[in-house]
Image (tube, rainbow, N blue to C red; front, side, top):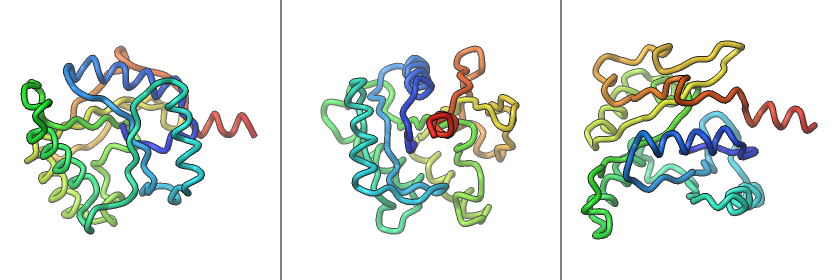
Length: 185
């Protein structure tokens, strides 16, 4: 599950727990995105502080520092994980070998803003992800006072099969890191 986790909160932990039940066998982990399309890059000090949050709760964490060789980030993640999972001897007997990405409604990768506003680039990249067997598990989120889920997103028809919704009955916590930061200031 990628994010900035500023701060890590119960909503993140519960969403990962629900996603792990949905995905079955696998190796769930959180991913600190040091470079985020919606926010300024994190400093080394900020990354260290965020890692400490995960150490305190005993969660596995990875750190994604940047895009790889100019390849679009989402597609690179899917291809890298798929290759790793298919080649690693420990993982070869695991039933589910395709990568799953856990996202919330707001960061679902269906939006052209993550592809320099280019709809065709977005489709090309997501089709590349689909070819790896990648699935995006999308949780709901409170957006401007309304709880939004995958059904509220206009996903292109050719990509619908790679998005799986976490319904509000499975997970709903109206909490955000931004609200927590604002309350603490």
